[in-house]
Length: 443
Image (tube, rainbow, N blue to C red):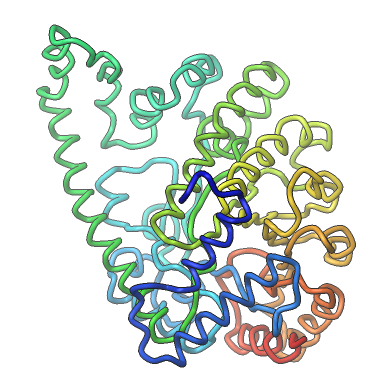
């Protein structure tokens, strides 16, 4: 990307590349045209215009496996079954965006690394369930200074040995910054000769081989779906809110809540330290996919998780900084407001964030109020309840989607989506959601 370009010019360049889909072997010109038309619809919605119709862009979790009778465990270990489920799901329902295969993760790699902070199907949760985070204090309360001064070193020598069994011996490694003069090199390399460290490296090599197999399979599955059905990816990259990196991955919810009261200044300093890490994560992932959308789930920002004052102090400022950093690079932050964000709307509709540069998915927020505040500011969607898709009748889904479109879509800048990642639904209900959106959502 040309650093002399403005954010708007970078945005256009990224979308042109996304829409052109150079190198994708579409099976025919009609499929390529359908792909490009879908990208244009989504771009129009982002820029607060009226596309030809409302794009139907559900956020998909493990539903393709539940729909096809493949267990989630099988999908994580058997890439033939992963491909079968993902291809059938997309062909049968034909949403406007692709649910990427790689988000479900490679089970063999997790086994080899002895990953501790998640449970995954067949390893702590049922084989038909999604994975589950097990929060803990993987950074202790008195380790803020070490983290702030050197986040990379902290991850290598402290976090990784706690979070992965395969990295346990890495706590004996010296900082890599010691490799500055010849006399230090020999002593630096000594830990790599110790048998447990060599076993760690052996496991990492095998995990790397397994990861390569997995990513090749996942990319092949998605490329075939794109080339045969013309579906652009819903997301091209991933980033996290800085508060969630500290609160979910490092300190845990209990730990970070105590820090908000016991050492707020260090917490704020650490949050600022994480912002460039999160921006960089988004930039690197988008560069690999040529898809300009970076997914940012807002795990701990919902109403009731903290007071409005604490949200404005600890949560939102670094989310905003991350969003602005991505926008500067022509990327579209795609934020999932998990839970209810009714109390947060007045804060997140921030005049410092340029109009028509972000995309928001809402879970349990009043969409009429979102419409009132977001019109002319940002693209939004979501709020089709997962519970409704699971237990309602198709006609109820049709009525719900029509009401959403009536309330939210009239001025453009709207996408139809689920309230959260879909794991369970009656097929006829999900089909009713997609088909109603496509037909009733025409402008």
